Amino acid sequence: MERWRWLSCEVESPAVIVNTTGFTLEVIEAQKPVLTMKIIVGRPYTRTPLFHTNITAIELNPAWHIPTSIVTKELSPLIRRDPQYLAKHHISVVRGWSDAASINPTNINWARLSPRSFPYRLRQEPGPWNALGRIKFHLPSPFSIYLHDTPAQSLFTRAVRVFSHGCIRIEKPLDLASYLLRDTSWTRDALQTAIEQYTRITIRLTRSVPVYIGYWTAWVEENGTVHFRPDLYGRDRRLSSTTRLDLQDNSDRQHQNRRCS
Image 1 (cartoon, rainbow, N blue to C red):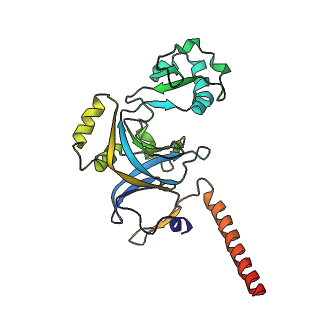
Image 2 (cartoon, one colour):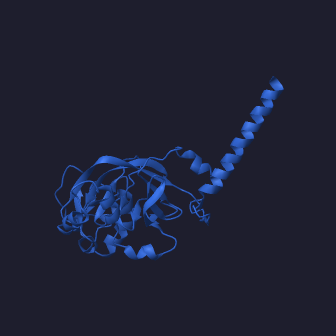
């Protein structure tokens, strides 16, 4: 109830509501869900943040510019063990952001690289192998978090879906893209054709759509069904403790005011 209180009394319509603990995404119109799908969220040590933003654009066949922390902590050991790892996963190495020329990865001493001294940029090329899948939804924020497709569709069969580095993988990206572009010439068939051509295309939305990324471990459906979910990130315990302290502070202040009056 405390987290619901944080939301505006009137959520804009349409809006995208993401519940990280329920592993669901809903598109809401006039307070009714018109589109629902499963999602995958961040692991407990790479948590999906909570924020409110807007979907401003849709990117087809995105490239993935792999964060340096992932490269040095996760990929570097794999590359040292298998010199063909990058080629197998369609990953190019370039020097920085201004130089797009590819570098031969065999000339790099991967063992000596660290997040503080990493002069390269790794880019996974567009295609069905790409970690972002075939569709990415831009969400401007300080967190570099976005909604995107995934080639690992089998993970959506899991009950607890905490597998990402913080971004939100969605089960039906083409459904969401078709909905957001429903009043344009970008029909579902047009989107599918563009995807199959492997061309990177960014489609700006004429009207951005609000997105609320929340963390609700309990909620009630219209028919009265109550749902409870585990406190995956331990946020309920922290919030409960903080709320109790706030209530105690308010009580102390009121008592003090009575004494001083």
